[in-house]
Amino acid sequence: MMYSIKKSFMAVLAGSALLLAACGGGGGDTKSGESKDGQKSGDKKVLNVGTEATFIPFEFMEKGEVTGFDVDLLNAVAEEAGYEVKIENTGWDAMLAGLQGGQIDIGMAGITMTDERKKTYDFSKPYFESIGMIAFKEGADIKSAEDIKGKKIGVQNGTTGQFNAEEVVGENSPDISKYESAALMFQALQSDNVDVVVTDKAVAEAYKKKYPDSNIQTITDDKAFAIEHYGIAFQKGSELKAEFDQALDTILDNGKYAEIYKKWFDGAEPDIEALRKAAKE
Ligand code: ARG
Image (cartoon, rainbow, N blue to C red):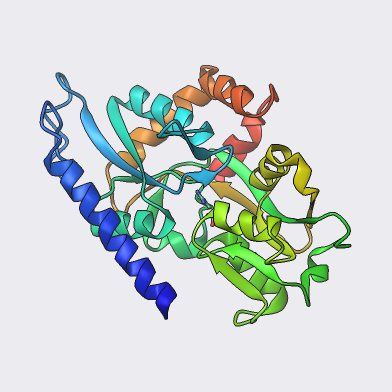
């Protein structure tokens, strides 16, 4: 009860902050929602972007700024498409609500393109491949997804981590605790409030690396968890989708994507062919 009241309050807060930001923008900002024609030659149109910035290495706060793979990628794609982006750490729920309500033009938060979400939002072509991962403290003896049964499970509310966990232990399982952000979920694991968390592969690995003293172990289970793809989220019917898809293609082709990928993934080469293939599916 408290939880949902607090959440909707937060959503309203975040929503009004965005509105204020949109009104007080001044300068050459073109307000979102206006016709996109005309304004593009001089000042670039500024798009409002929402995110949940505790999802390392995709988006996280550093010196008061949102940074990460998603941020670099979105900036590159937007620049290619001729837009400017203003990225705000709105939180997950407010991001999705803002997209639906029209205060937010773009959601960029390692968002998995699920069939359910495709009913409400439009997505770009896939820009990253992921799969569910279980993180736990050393000694918890987790070898497959089945082993989370009977454990205290932490997930980020409304994410595929939650859906993956529910597939294994049931939708209304009292063993699942839902947290508002990825950071709160990992904190719960570190402080032993939960035994395991179910999240995304690259993020579990990044937390494990960032907190070496927490003895975090990770496993995935490709029988239980499906391959996921992240997409840039737009309002349903948004004209931005076509423009951003084209810009993303350019960046995949010209080496910019690979450059950004290497920067955030220890110099690893991205599998661009796999992304292209997934775009056709
Ligand atoms: N990929 C997962 C999903 O879409 C988790 C995304 C969580 N993102 C975040 N910035 N916390 O459900």
